[in-house]
Image 1 (spheres, rainbow, N blue to C red):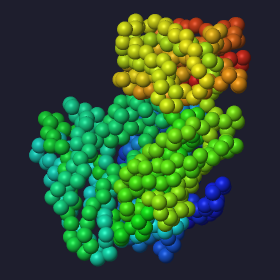
Image 2: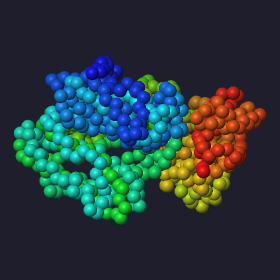
Image 3: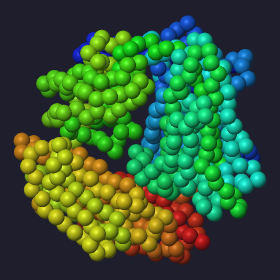
Image 4: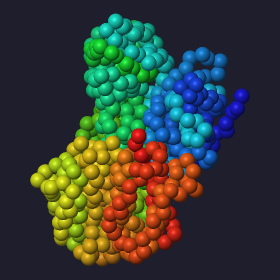
Length: 634
């Protein structure tokens, strides 16, 4: 039996004197994960040692990290992966987390991404020796592609919000959906549980994702609702649908922008949680009901694991937790909102039995004047909320530490103040000149786009609707902005950006911010999904920097032969373009050299090549600066 050691350290949050004792239990440490095409599922079971049962646990956060394997390239497909736990000498298996893998065809060797999910509700299970099974599904080639995966349990010691009493698995499986002769309700039957005499409240926790593809797109690409029924009454109604165009992991190689049934490619599922007003010592009934649905040729499946967790009375009446600092932050899941200068945003959770109606929030940026905010509102027990703080943050330093602490929930002493403080890394947003040019080249569907610039307080400095713009046309707007913090938001209502490989007929557009001399100060990727979200500052006491990295895009990525490479740079340089075989990059099919080249479209016709995948690579002064995949269609 393989046992992994616990990585132990204390965290002291400087500036406030609060401390939390944490350990990390790592069950899978940079392991290469591949498919088993013969079965469609591959299991990676590892034993790990968790804290013993007498030790109080405040929270358990599962950190899941993906990278490209050392000896392979990243995998291609959006498969369902499961993370399951089984205690020693117990046959019951619990799905504690679910991952939908990204389309990794674009990712390079240095790529990596990390997600987080709260698994504290399984603290009764994650004790002593536990078998953690990472299950990777799918059928793609397992010799040349895979993932490098780390499963890290971040455990914080301390008084729990409420002492768990029991965990009940009520549903677990792939349930057929849309079958007239075997409706899903035959399987999602009511479950009756006898509450423990210690139980004060309960929670239902659900991982649910829709899969399969019938004539209506169900279950992956159709929106259906689900009801949670408690003691015969509906206590929760949810549309099982998720918009994917704002995924912080972008762009991806496949159909990452397409909205799906409660999941997206490159997404660690955040489970649904519903509080249940159970009564001590009395039985209660829980049931899940799906929207009625039948079709002639069904193939949909609802992949569901659901648990009921019983808890004792909350340990405190007044207990607030600072869950996350969203802005400013360098956490990769917050990357669409950062770097940032403006009104900070935090996420808080009320862990006290009394509704949270007021508190003091202290915050400051390293080197700047401390601020206090007297917050008022209403957050129920177990609920989270985003709070915007009223004073802007900005530093001339490139990076600084940002501190936040929550004090006096409901005017009372916090029962557990060790999780009231956090710090994040502030990265200074780009500094732009007072005069900028918004450069916008439309694609073939300009009516889908709007864009605007506003300051931290919502005052709009510039706004434009492109509904009357012409396709494949360049528009430039010159703006003069006052000093301050700003946000540039470019939105696409279809969620497919200004280019998307699956919609080649829509063409490719571009967005840049230029200075008054026409030089790029910020260049954006065209494959951005739902929106570009760019924060910047205008300062008269600081110089601005040019975006001197060349902007390169190739379109279409899936073609019968013709492709166009768009190139833009602030300087004229020697550029080399290579077309190489995807599986053997030493095999060069075409090589083109351009001397003193600055900008323009470069056209190629690859129709004479075999119908397979290739890479197009761009070198500037001998250094590789761009690499992307091209697929020649059969």
